[in-house]
Length: 187
Image (cartoon, rainbow, N blue to C red; front, side):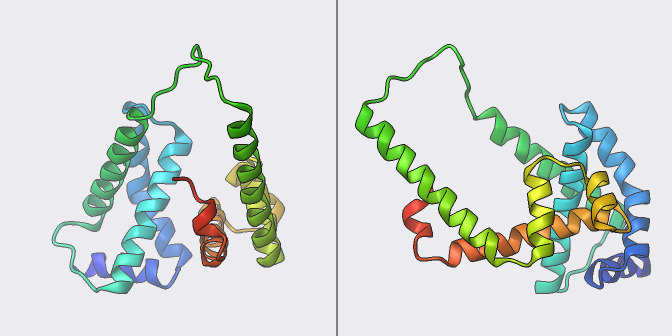
C-alpha cells in the first residue's frame, strides 16, 4: 500500500507534515479509546508517541510490510501498549494504611543508595546538551508539552514529545553505560 509507505517514510525522515497527517488521522480514535478505558488525555498522548517510536525503530531495524491500513496498524499498537500498561499498573498494590517498620540500618542503607542514584543521575544530566538538559528539567517538573513548545520555540507538541523522548534516551544511555549503574539499579 502506497499510503503505508508514505507514513513510514514520514516517520523515518521525521517529516513533520507527514507526522501531523498521522496524528490527525489516528490520534482522535486512540484518545477516545483510552478515555473510555481508564486513561487520560496525557496517557493517550504518551501511548500514541510510544507506538510511533516503536514502529519507527522496528521499521529502521527491519523493513516490514503492513498488510492492513497504517491507521489500523497504529491504532492496534496503541491499544496493545495501553492494555500492557493497565496490566502492569493492576499488579501494583498500594495500601496507605500499612506502615512498614524498617530497622535503622536498613533505612540508612536505602537513603545512601537513593543518594548515590541521585548523584549518578545529576552527574549524567550535566553531561548532556544544554537544550536536552533544559527540556528534561521541564519534563521532570511536569511542564506541559504546550509550555515546552512556547518556551523552547518548537513548532508543535509532537516535536516537544519527540525531543523529550530523544533526550530521555540519551540520558538513559549515559546512565546505563556508567560502571556504577548495575550496582545501583533496583533489584
